[in-house]
Image 1 (spheres, helix red, strand yellow):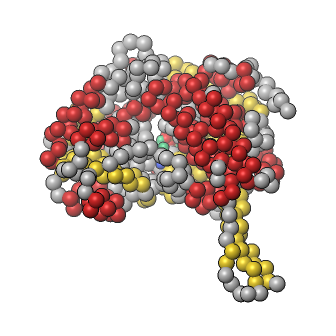
Image 2 (image 1 turned 90 degrees about the horizontal axis):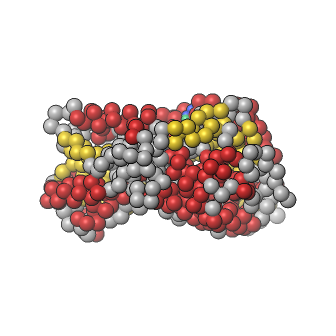
Image 3 (image 1 turned 60 degrees about the vertical axis):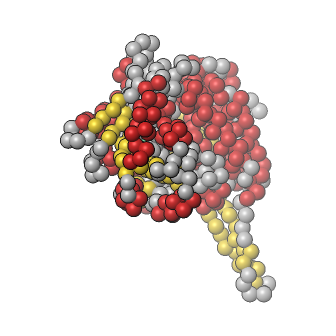
Length: 500
Ligand code: NAD
């Protein structure tokens, strides 16, 4: 059946980012319909410092309408054969791949992230997550439990109901798919609270998903955190909250879940250490530092390797090679194919970054090294930032301890293994870490002792489907990206005991 969409542009006809913006401006996506909201907010195109389009600024009633729609759709969706649910989700992944280029352009314009180095990859990983989880429908298994011979004891996995998924702006599509792909395959329906900074690519992907799913299974509301996000977390029909964002908002969201006694998963910030040992390969390590620090995402990554500890025997060579390579990276218009580094998302985030660099500049003995060249033509210069290295910072400096969420990393020299492990663990966060060595003994010892949820040796990859991802300490609660994440966070386990 054709779905009727009353927008200035039908998404089915959209062939450019502008077409999608015309279809999605001021809209939520509820029950398969792009629904106008009563109020709107401006979404900026940070590379040009102009308004890209206006988006919905949803109120509690609009959030309530989305939750009611998701609630009505949930029993039918839960009763759909689990493998069939998975196949629909996987098909949506392939459809997103087919439209990836235009949505990647939309993403580049709303986030300021470079098309070539970031946005195309984000679309690919998002589609891959849908395909990965789409294959896991038949893994929603229970157990039989040996008990009394006259009793048959078993467990089943049930969906939770309506899942509220709240996402930030830095990798909005991947972070959305990490939540909704397992939630949907497990038989839940979802209401996504898209980021008010970058809602359009998320809306576009939801519209594409909906072509394969019953109306009401995937819904999106757009609005700010304090009104729209808070209305979602407080709604009595939300059975589970899954949140990615800042530690501060995470604490509020966790509190809202506690008030209603519903499960909450939190993926929060990080200050991830990278330990480079004396025997590490310099070329690999410098490549790993650039990719691990997510310089092509302007460092706006929760797993950014923002504390790099380099053995003293490699320190000078590492610094020379790193600065030489960063100097060559192209900072510029996110839509330009040559651009490797785009813009910071907004003025508030840029001011935060500048404040931390200022702290380092004012610290006696510390040094600040800025790399690369800021663009001078074709863009508005306001939100561009150079890759910046903070050297010889004291361990207790706020710039060394707090998440900066920009292209700024601290680099420290070390010569004592015990001291560097202690320094790496001296953090309230515990999201990720990497260790660079050819020594099996050091690799095994360090991976055991580092107090983080995700530790890699001799590589610094982003989130991978099938590998559980999630932090310890103030970095959050719960895992994403794996089968375990679907079973533990998007189902509830029922014990059934049958006496013969
Ligand atoms: P943010 O916390 O300001 O916002 C995240 C989302 O939460 C947005 O959609 C926002 O509208 C909503 N929100 C804000 N306050 C809310 C409230 N009181 N109730 C309900 N919803 C609310 O974060 P941001 O600035 O969008 O993103 C950057 C942060 O996200 C960084 O701290 C970063 O570390 C974190 N992050 C973590 C991960 C991870 O996997 N651990 C991944 C990406 C980003």
